[in-house]
Length: 129
Image (cartoon, rainbow, N blue to C red; front, side, top):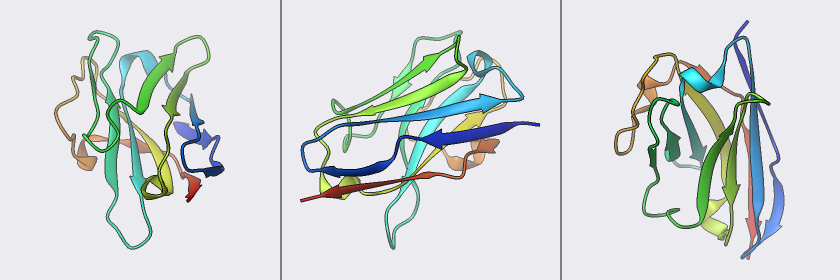
């Protein structure tokens, strides 16, 4: 059974850092494209990072988080991370990890949600001012 489980969310002050984790079961992350999305209250879900499958060394971030967020993969732990620093109140939301079931996936700019086949249930991040 394919499953993604996020963890690491919580409450942090503005300017602080958090590291989100997403552990996969039922498949090997190396061969999948991976992404983190977030949904703020009253807003649509948006992509905040994308990591291409291990064939490529390519990532994507929107301007809103570029330089502050870093996506990475630990193959041994079958886990993808989102390191977030210099957090702002507007980073508040539910963060979801997702995976593309396609080998050789190369992240495009702002990859659409429909490309992602598997989703976690999300973890809440609250950034206080």
